[in-house]
Image (cartoon, rainbow, N blue to C red; front, top):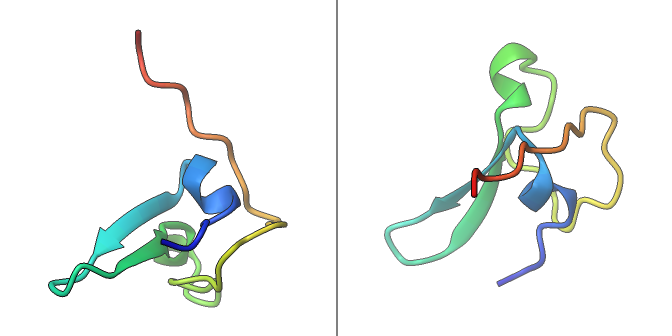
Length: 58
């Protein structure tokens, strides 16, 4: 699997697994702004819309 970079730690990043087992990272920012890429090229090293995901409760 390719390292998704910031997408893995972003509140808007969502892993999507295809029927064949490939994993893609979808960006939920696209839902609000259709000009923003739905599936960014990985790894994402810089992103103007990056927002850290809240940590999972312990």
